[in-house]
Image 1 (spheres, rainbow over the protein chains, first blue to last red):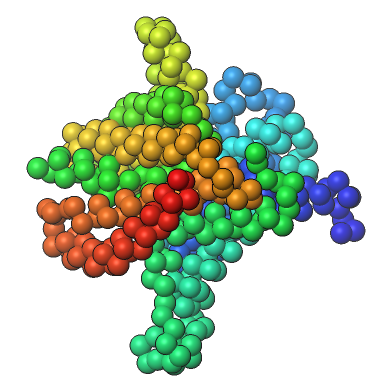
Image 2: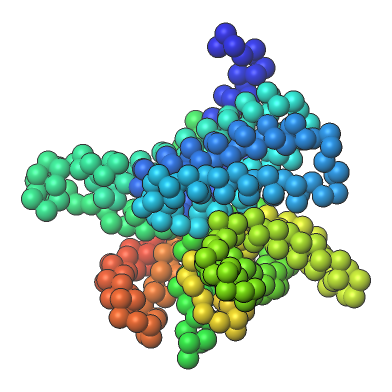
Length: 214
Length: 240
């Protein structure tokens, strides 16, 4: 951490655990749940959000003194929308099937509350470098939850990771399936995303009782 | 018939909250009390009913491939659909501001109950999601687009109303401390979503592929329903 002062590294590390955007601040749930049935889309989503947040925070921080406060929401929306269009076009060009799979949820990064929330709370009052770190940190906190949820849902739901059959072949009954293990098809259905996130919150708050709400 | 099918499908089967998790942020943040939940829910229906048809017009006459032919035959090759995100969100943001001004001017009482939620709604994913789904599902007519906006708004309204009522009651039960608040709300929403999945078998019409999907989904659901009943029964036991 030679590059970063202690205060700066806190910006990145805090959102990873005790100030996680999903489990503590309750922001950006919408897209977090819908695309986590498999690991690959979760990771693509995490990277897309990280790009949009990092760059967006810098742009807003650079413009923070010239944006009239009355129309700042519209300015923020335009900045995010532009960045999301770039992400969407890149995905369509280089990973077409994946972009079809993510369907409208790439577009919904625009209304991802984490992004607007960080613009409002941080980038409007801080310089570009610190805002960039804050953006990357929060996007990483978001990505970590996405990847955890995606990991468990794909592993337990389909018995695969990144499409590789890590638990053996369910049709030919090899690996774990030889012992009578069955995939829990329920895990790939939407409701289980909510329950998995609920369990992550449960575990996190049990480990750190300071986070418990009354 | 087409209208009726879309109406019920958007409310129950493709429920914004339970099937696509749209608008979850405000759904979780504003569902502590039934009265505020009703206000926000009504505002969502209202704004969806305005923005979805409007964005349908935009999509149909400006953004789609070949949509600009009404300007002249030389525009037939233009495809502006990559601009749809920015156009949709701009329409939504301006419409929300406009609605806020109009409501404030003409109906102060409605403004008092609805007004505080309107700015929140510009960045609600349910609103943008409504327009994006309208685009990706290629809804055919303006009437259907209006129907889609209203009915998916009603679905969202139902969801937030139900969770607010449950959260008001659950305050009196002994939820494990780390789950209190957010955690238990997630899990209850998951259970409610399982319940709503059983509406999947309600669809009758549609084309053949859709029926096939429904059949497969229905088979899974029968198994799931049993589990859902069991967990719901457990849940009510806990509440009691």
